[in-house]
Length: 161
View 1 (spheres, helix red, strand yellow):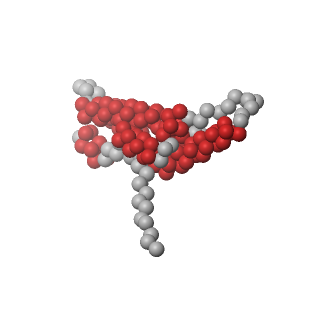
View 2: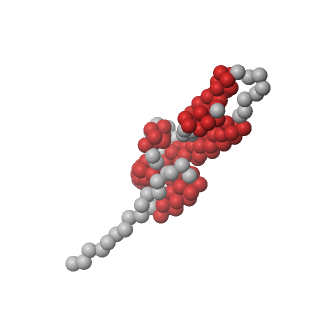
View 3: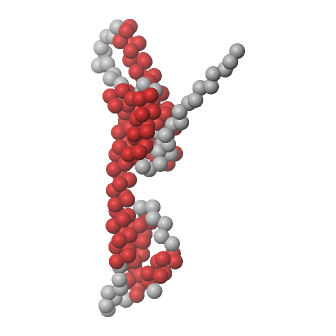
């Protein structure tokens, strides 16, 4: 009796590069036949509407697919992001949130880039006290750190000197 080796494709991990991850994840979910539930969601019947046995079975199958797609998405997303989407109850809601998250991430990156530029261009103005210059500089550095920058204290001291 020979055992067949089944290779499970790895679930693409979200690494803050949404465009690349979304292509990989879409392909992965398509291969598992869950992509339609991610794009369309599960259509719930109207309140009080009677369903045939076939319709009820179809709805249960779609809900199971949605649950499995959720499982893959949860495994693909880092814990820090996952904690923000635990209230999302369908694969479609999770996918839509990740699209928005991508926009938020891009905006943060652009803000950080603008702040870095401001930091580099910052000069002490004539007649300005060292304390005022230091305050302006630290305000920019603190904003940069809020957006995830890891500017070393050495660079800040060099900038002041």
